[in-house]
Structures are given as structure tokens and as C-alpha cells.
Image 1 (tube, rainbow, N blue to C red):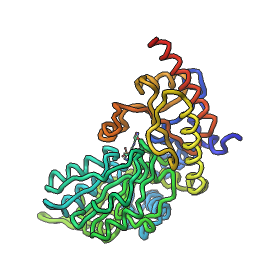
Image 2 (image 1 turned 180 degrees about the horizontal axis):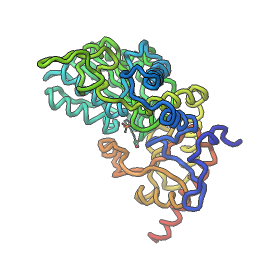
Image 3 (image 1 turned 90 degrees about the vertical axis):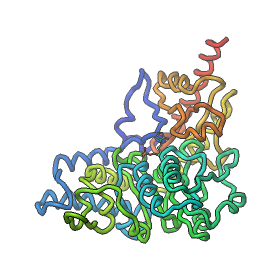
Image 4 (image 1 turned 180 degrees about the vertical axis):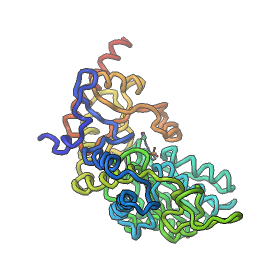
Length: 407
Ligand code: 7TS
């Protein structure tokens, strides 16, 4: 059966290096459906204007589009209020906001920030630096060999010293989904907060911030069929209210006096300067598209593909797969014999197959895996089994080629 969604993504219908494009790098960034591209074009062609300022018709339309997108995000992650939805440049900026504002104001020596070695650098360095700046201790939850967490083993690490637990929801290398709801309960029981990097989870599964009971949750538009330059920080209102902005200027002020100033109410106090208006509108259109598919269908589709890929790839002799045997979703990270992953990716590219190779912005995890680098195939709605069959064929060809070269 042909993939019913692929027709919605114009970029996928092209040849690369003389072969039909097989795009297996959605973990880095996803492709965009026509409806997202059109929503952004309509804004620029029809009502481009700044938001929250003018009373003129175009300005009002732009503000309605921008704030309408915020409401779509709220509904998408089931937040209580739009005041809890802060637009940022992406996941990285959203995490930095929490680490620079909340963490630096609330931590002191003796307090602990707990994370894992499997974090993307964007969910690692901001906390590492906040710990350094405040004298807090930076600690790591032990991971099982497949990247999962054993809740029973980590329970004793979460103590009244634990002020922040910062963790990924879905790993961009291992494909593991972490038990966020259980972790949130444990962290709250000792009076701490939990901040969750949802960059990979939000595109692939239904996220309900109230059900998970997370304090902060961050994700990027570009990984979920929206444009680059827009992302989201969800924060519980009670926490965001206590926090100081880290960017000052237009848009976020209430009153400015010579020697002091006051801020707008949530969410705007964290949105200094002219925001990414077309980006927010594009993200709103992406959410409409995702909802039209249904996040439950999406999750089942991406799990099925990741499982099929792991099964097929594990039959290639000399291929190592990282991450859990089952229960993986959306991606497979691997190495092929002693061939450098960049060489694997280069041979695959010659076949029109796009995969990512490198450390995936996870250097501590690469060290923990004892790998200098890995290759990764990541899947999304517009992929199907035929893409994975092409990958397996390409990998066999790569193996043959390098076997021949090295012999
Ligand atoms: N967190 C995780 C888990 C990620 O996978 C990424 C990006 C980020 C944070 C940062 O997101 P950004 O939108 O702010 O850049 N991950 C990847 C990747 O795996 N390959 O390229 C980018």
C-alpha cells in the first residue's frame, strides 16, 4: 500500500543523485506539508504586519493568527491556559530560558540538578552551566545498557536535595521513551521540579502536560512539520509567574520609567522583541495537520516503522543497533562494522538516501556507548516500509563496497 500522506509533502517528490529521495533524517528536521507552506505564504502575501501594536486591519489579522497559533499549541499539549505557552526560537532557547531564569534564581550550593548522560547538548549544557554558576551539584541518573531507566534503581537518588530533574522524553539517539509521569511523581514528592525536553517526543506521540504533570516542557516547530525559528516553552503558570524574564525590550514591557520597568503579564513577559509571526502561524498549521492525522495514528505508525527497521537491519551481519530491542520509536541508530558512519552516510547519499551521521549533539552519550560516532535513520509519517527496504539495500551495498576496499 502506498503511503497516503507522502503526497502532501512536495519536497519528497524529487530525485537525488539519480535516485528517488528517501528522506530518513526527520530527527534532525522534518519535512513540511503544503498546508504549512501555504499558511506562511498567505501571511506574507495577505496580512504581513506586526502583532500586538497597530489597530489597523492587517495588524489585527496578524495578531489573531499569532495568538490563534498559541491556542492551537495549548490544545495540542493540553495545557490549562495560553498563559503557559511561551513562544521561543526552538527547544534550545526554551531550555535556556528555564535554566537561566528559574534555575539560577532558585539553586544554591548543596542543591542538586539531576539529568542523564543521554541528553542532547541543548538539555545538558544549560543545566551544567547553571550548576556551575550557583554551586549546585550536577548528577546523572544511571541508565540501563539500552538507554532505559529502571525506576526502582533511581528512586534513592531523588532526595530533598533534588531541586530540578531535567530529562528527555524521547531520546534522539536511542529511540527510548522515558517514564516521565512516574519521574514527575517522584520529583514532586521531594519538592523538586521536572523539566522535560520534548523535542523528539512532541512530533511523534500525544503529549498531555497535565496528565504527565511536568513543570516545564520544551519542543521545536521544525521537528513537527512546522518551520524553523519557532518553538515552545510550556511552564506551569505558578512557576512562570515567579520567574524573571531574561530578554528585555519591546513587546514584553508594561511601564518603563527612567530607573525601573515592569513587565507584561504571561505569556508576553518572556517574549521580548518582534516575534516569529510567520513561524507561529506555520506551527499552528502544522498542528492542524498533525491533528488531522491523529497523534495516536502517528505514534503507531512511527513505532511500527522503527520496529520494522530494527528487525530488518539486525539481519545485516556486522551491524550494531543502539537502544532498546523493543519499545523503540521513530529512529534507529547504528554502526556498520568498522566503517565510519560518515562514510556510511556518504555511500547512502549516493543512492538518494538521507541519514544523519556524527555524535548527534550527544557527546557524553557517545562516550558512554564507547562510540566516536554513529549513523541514524529517523522516520516520520511520510515514510513507509519501502524506504526501510531501500535503506537495507543501501547498507548491504555499503558493506560490500567497504569489504571490497578493505580486503
Ligand atoms: N533535544 C533533543 C532531544 C533533540 O533531538 C534536539 C535536536 C534538541 C533538543 C535541540 O532542538 P533545536 O530545535 O533547538 O535545535 N536534535 C537534532 C538531532 O538529533 N539531529 O539534529 C538535531
